[in-house]
Image (tube, rainbow, N blue to C red; front, side, top):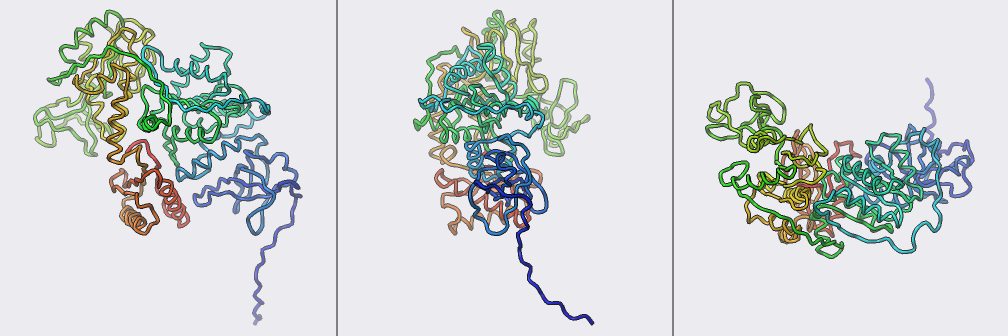
Length: 630
């Protein structure tokens, strides 16, 4: 029988170094793409002497992590490590070209902290994927010491867009003016607007260097322009949402065009937004910050009211007339004459609140028609069968679930039905519909009936001789907190498309406050009234909010835990927990609100909650800090 072996403790022994380490600042602090939420932190790695010249801030490297090799991004170098135990070495440098600066890395760190997010998720948004073929032809230009003006560039301004002029031309002119001081970073909500701005820039000055860093330019072109943008310039860098993180060389101005757009809110975690990231850059960098829009969002309006942002006043007047619809008609009777006069001069724009043909209701009991899934039934054309807006199911033999009758009634007109009615009312003119999958970017100055839904408004080469907003109150009937803000923006944007001398015709009660606001081209009274109401109710922008989405089976336990944390002082006393309410697909949501002073503590609490769930290998929560709307 074999005797028992002696028990020996394993000792952690550092492996023999296969390569000598760097003699100067031999430790690199690196963000590692671990793929695990709770392992999101800086890690120390030793720098081999062979790689020492290449390892610098913003360089991509490959490092060992657990039992695999992963990508990392160098944040800084230091002389010693603060960690005990074995320090592993960088395996190789993936690219010697820095893709970030100290300022851009600090920005990423700040945003990750402010939105309870994972740093590497932000790196994916902020830095385009590497394209090796692009790097082979890239030449990095060192910034000269005197590249910036001695005069500070700082300025924080909201400049309202004015009517009778192309909005994208206005922002292009602002960018050209700002280029005299240094590089300009210009952000627009979507590709159509960035392309329009770039076209105007070329028309203003063909020699202006323009760099697009948006996904629509193609992976290679985007990465190439991103690298060139880091050179001193000056140049104008144009992009959509993610371009706000771009480390632009000799940056002196940031312009956010149409700042109230919902497209500026990132949908993926950690769900940051362009406006707040731009304001962080303004606080930490020597840049001016210009917001444009037909009117400011409530967040910016609150800063204007507090005199933290300068507001450029515009003294303008428009011809605005209101025509209430007393009998539910699409076009009130008195509106026909001004439309006929306008059609003799050029195109007339009609803004309709809904796309499609119409929503179905019972002709007898007037109850709305619903699908088995709960979605509303719509009718695509006069002769088509009803179908579900949500799941697409077609009802060839539809009958009302309430009274059993089969008579159909259109409870709400879509733009297709509105086009039929308007075409019959004004025969002999072409009808152009811009909505859904058929969006027109431009129309000529010839007389025509142009119908558009919000967001699909075509530009007219001469401006519209009249702008008609149909069913005006419908735009103000949305239940979320941004509903009225979107409606006001739509009214001002649509009215801004009118030609000099043209009329704005509103199908709305003449006592509605939007009427005088448009006539004076001043939203001040509307904004101050809503800000006062929100201040009294402690709603955004005077409070901060975070949205938490989890599975239904966990929401009760989560709610109890949050309320207990408030009682025990782990969450500030100003925190209120609203909900739970359904979020669809078996999920529920909770809303946490607090005052601005305590909100960072709420974010840190939610981040730590997510870390602990990740450590316990539980399903993650979805966290949205300061979501677009509630």
